[in-house]
Length: 180
Image (cartoon, rainbow, N blue to C red; front, side, top):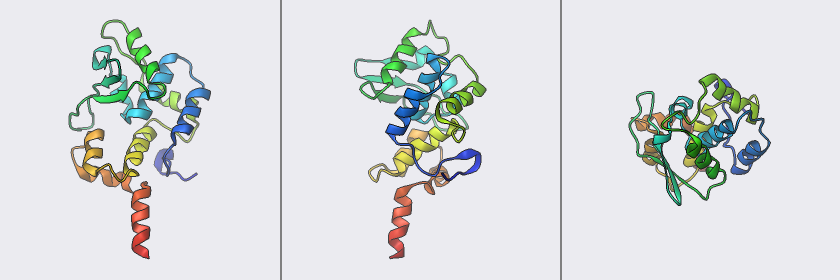
């Protein structure tokens, strides 16, 4: 398996692989499992997820809205929308509803965030992998524009996508066609 700095994967994690990690992961607490699920679906940074309080979520009959404040100078984005029919989203709903008042949904620190990912997915994984994974999934979809990806990831500049283009099958495929 190819690696980049800090063990970045060169291919995206499939839904099936992720679900397998969720099912067989070594989670200490229920909130740890939900944390991993949020990272996978949204691709937010660990610190962005750790700052979430109950009031940053709005749960409707069919959608969970997560208002996640962008960090590292990113632009403010609208709330993420997670369809409740997605696997494991109901676990997120259960966790949010269990939080009293506006306390933290994930009451642990960054180190614990790293340990959660390592325990559940293995040593070659780390929290930012899920941000990379979400970006690569979008890049591999020819119907998703680079500007849409920029908005989802809350990047100020479209140039930030250049850090991820090398991982994209769409980019590799396009360049392979140029060789012919």
